[in-house]
Image (tube, rainbow, N blue to C red; front, side, top):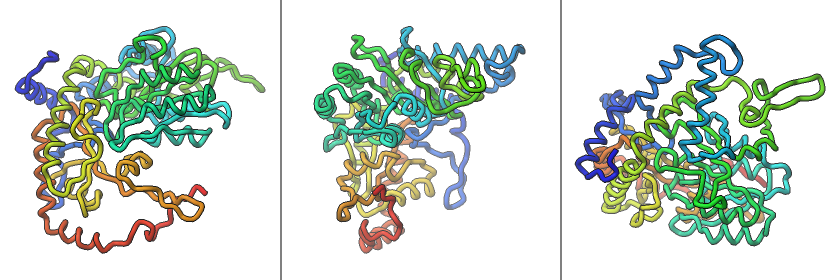
Length: 463
């Protein structure tokens, strides 16, 4: 596609892309029982599939056989597709080097847990994470070893100097730096290659959560210099228009061969004796059990389609939608925006907001019930980050911190098929919500509600 597309051409291309999507015309029921097509503004959670992805899965299932376990023609065909797919995955993330291998996973959470269970050798190991991470790139590390966190600024951007400060403070004792390529809350894109250079200077390896970047920006694991190379990259297929489960970890072959994840079974071994086991090298040792072949097939096809579309176009299209949404929200009284709403070049198509005196859940329910607009509300599996963005501190009770979930916010997130009409409909419904009698009533009773510390449910207290 022409990367210099004008607005008119972008609109035409957007219409063409909408016709490529599966399920956009499906009707859903509103609160008033009317049937309408849904508007999906929750793409950061999961995306609809390309029609071509669905067709490719159907075609490959005609020739589906056991992966790596049979000599029948269908088995050999499926094994070839599955095995050759690793090179397609590596090429998609710019890992065009013999130093990397790729293994398939169920999703990003699964992949990071496998890495954490393999790479952490002792509770004394130290991992450097950040306060903007999704729980998937936080809990697997903190539950296994000592984890320290780099701070974010008032707008929610990662403070790179704090990454540097922690690396200097621990002076070579940090084994891994793990960071998101793009936030699932604010959409900020981190300079992971610069962070990689910092990590490598202090003897650490870098792990990148790529779940929110792969469908939005071109990504290369190879930096301008070897010091900027990414060591491990993890992502899911269901956020890149192939929502049938699946994803991949691309990582350093020599490091993966020195470790093994705590996930065992058939397919990962060369030999099992009564009292000893000989494991296969990576990637096979990380893929115990029968694989999710349809998920792999769909992911490989979606990669092909995204590369053909061109990430320059995708980025430009998202920026148009994000700018339109933010400008519209800033004009609506009572809307509270989070993150930098002016300088958005380093954001993928995600925006988060609240409406004063209206619960985020009420906003989401109204949008879904009155116009079938799907958004996400609450804290997006990133509680520590959301607390910082909303300026709410953890509740202190004597010597303990009571771990209440944060109030949260509302998130809209764009896909390549969304258009300006979707944004305008969303903005119109926000304006209508503020005029709605139910919301005015709700705002009144909310002002009389109990405070956070007086909630009736029991918080999770780690002690």
